[in-house]
Image (cartoon, rainbow over all chains, first blue to last red; front, top):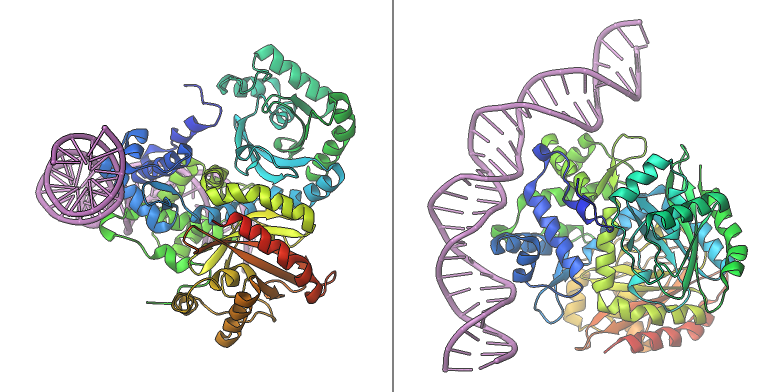
Length: 265
Length: 265
DNA sequence: TCGATCGTATCGAAATACGATACGAAACGG
DNA sequence: CCGTTTCGTATCGTATTTCGATACGATCGA
């Protein structure tokens, strides 16, 4: 099995039952994802080369998605961008996911107490996905959006969840993760990661110092389901210009633990 | 032409070019939307009856969506719910939409000043869709989510945007809207709506008192594009238990106007 | 002015999706 | 306790639907 990349892109192409898979649907989602990945409007030709499809096939996929509202023409009229109808699915997902409904009031209270950025992330195989974000400062825009996906191994939330798994499961996840750093401080060697997991097992929460963003310190505690398996994490993030790591831990570790415990079953 | 319902569902089925439309893709999205609309996990049979499709066709659509991560099995194992991969598309949309990036820091500042709930909504034909939501209190959960869609005619943001359109365009939108109230205070008669639009043209911002939620007062100012056409609105929402309408207008009208002006081109 | 690329449009061939059918398991009700 | 329903899963021949080559006018840049 090839390694999944840390954003889970490989899981995307790994279809389930080939007998029951609608190929034109898979291709159409590849088009939608390619446009979203681009970062700027993409033309039919560009999309075709991104997803290795015939231009005609892309034309049909784009026309269909555009008709449904999941793609739109770019402002200037050239190229295509994700469409507003996507937010309707976002609404459905947020509304129907119990942990998000339960966590919302808890995180609002937590943010009032902590007065720092507070997030809820969801475990999704080798990555975490942010589902609730309560920011308080102007920050790096893409980094603070709902839906941001990061590898479990260098995020505090991911490590808090790894800490609750048995070693075989941890090995499996780390084995399928692409251990690539994104800052100079990212810990991405296996012994280092295992050390951070051991630390999280000791403290009950996990810590990451400048591992995803320079100048930022984050800690997180895991939320479990009825079987004790981790499903989400409560994050608290602050700036190193305002906190020492020791002070940050002492102040927010207990708060994150308490919130995560209240959300667990 | 049949009336679009106020949530824009009719626009969903109105395909573009039938020659270029992938029917299996349209059907699959109908399945995805049916599951999202449900509010609780749905079985294959239920979905089939919701979208008038053969059970086999639903089976294939669900298997495909599940393989891609846009649908998941419900917790107990019975039925299907929207999947985490939806949030990846959310991320793409939020990141690639310029007005959202521009508005984020402005709304954060506005919220600090106003200390009340602040939202950004996007115009989408006969409805508005919330794209940024900065809440401060525990509130009615579904009503405060990203992606919530409401008719333009009874929302303050919708009326603020209607106020910037010429009368023909206003008539067109109202004509295609389903004028149905959702609270006892919702103004849904044409003369009443036109009166509120005239009021918005006079004040520069629009007001809605308990029209979407009892006990809540909201005002909003429109954001325009380079041509002066409305594309979004800045909302400020508060509780009638803390504010009189007059005080609320005096305090927040200028703030919303200023923020919207800063975001317009 | 020329060449490349944009989005759009057409059409015959065959690959792909359709939908009827069937199965074991689990949940339900008498 | 057993009959009944509904769950998700699986199979397969048919023909509907998608494929992909091709072409067109418009627009943009060199």
